[in-house]
Length: 194
Image (cartoon, rainbow, N blue to C red; front, side, top):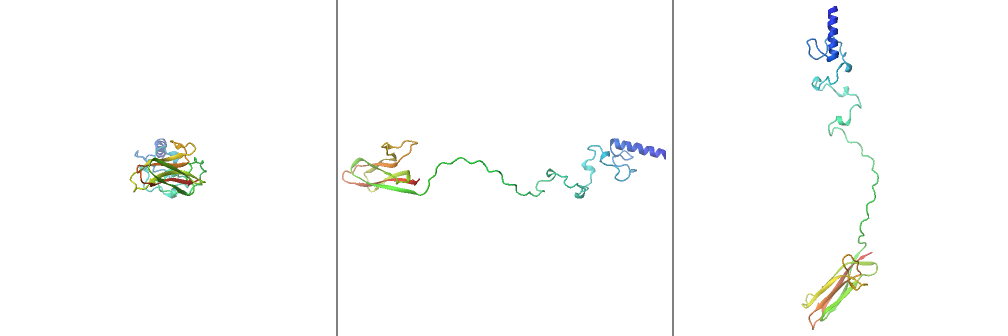
């Protein structure tokens, strides 16, 4: 009897020192130990491998509530949470360039062009509007009339506007080589409300 107790004690010391072993040296619980007598304190670190756990041995009932983290689940297994609160208002953006306000109208000046190397006129916008473009035209049936110039005009300087300058009206000049005839021409300005 004393010999059996000594033998069992030696086996228990080996199991506690190097992991649970059977009497024949294989890993496993000692058959003489009571059921569930080997706890986490008796198992060495990393002593239980995935292969030691039976398939489906760990069920939901054996997992402590609130012990798992979101990273323990595969993508799509957890439902999406409720929408978060609206974020803080962002900074105001930069002011954009001034746009066209209100209606856009066209104003026209008609001009009879007689025999002359150069005849011209300009047309401005009514009060409350500003020029935004323009153009010129003439009677296509008159074969001897031609357009000499057409462009934005600065009335105060009595000249066509240069690149980057503002303008007050639209001016066009025509020529007519027909010494006996007069042709009709028109100058247009496009006006936008300010």
